[in-house]
Image 1 (cartoon, rainbow over the protein chains, first blue to last red):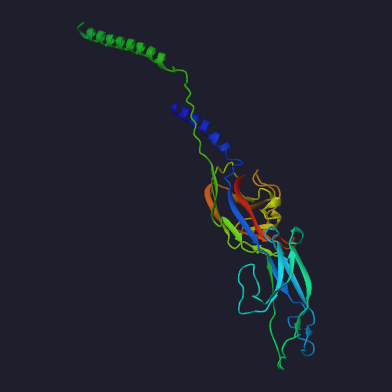
Image 2 (image 1 turned 90 degrees about the vertical axis):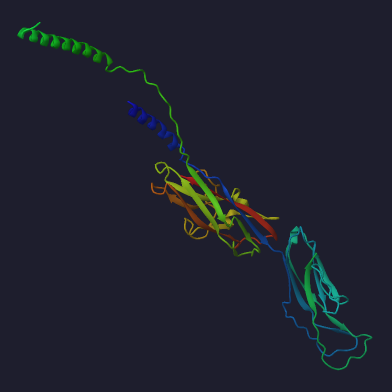
Length: 156
Length: 198
């Protein structure tokens, strides 16, 4: 009698635990994903990086052949107001800083491109006209004169 | 009474008394057999709780320092995932691990644009997507989202492994081939992991 009761009690327990396992789901674990698209600006000289004055230096203006300059940018318009192209000769007093380029007394801003949502990804091509103006300058000794003109694009 | 007949009389008396005793005893025995009280029921209840868990051991934070447009970008380290279960093999055929994005169209959100789940791929060489596969499957067993899920493995359950675990590595990548150039900035999102039985 006692054995029969114990068996019946055991059978009464069994079905309750079986039904709970169908469609059982765990707690959720998460993986945090992040990826950064870095802003970029670039300047290139599609027609080459050398410019030679045609003919000889003369007193007065001496013009080089225009040089093509290509500038591209891919920036965040929320953080960039303008893209600026500057040209400069390396000199003894070079300015420093993330938004500065050029040298004291030797820098020229070629253009400032305003940035908006519409042109945050963009490019432009310009011709750079260079001139050596010897008007009123002392006569130069004969010989070859060379130098490096730097071009750099910065964001502001 | 004495004499040979006295001994016989004593014997008969003994037999008579014994018989009466036996007769009386028998009636008592008959009255006790088959008698019982009403049954009292004791309700017993005991539950063995099934267990199912997912733990990320390492790689819970995944970063790409510099995305390249129009290219495949790999997250540098794998995610180590341990799935554990204690289930009834009579009611559970498989334990499945599902990865999913809550909003598939915006798997990663950036400053101006979003990267959809179709551009995020997962690979588990010890599971089902042995090659990089876009996280664009549908939910399974009520877990996951339509078009934003990926079944990572389906573990068959039998008696020997009804209480067990496994550890797997998940590799992730963002494929931007043919995708419009992203605006510069930070893109973030969460990939959810959940196990479910079937």
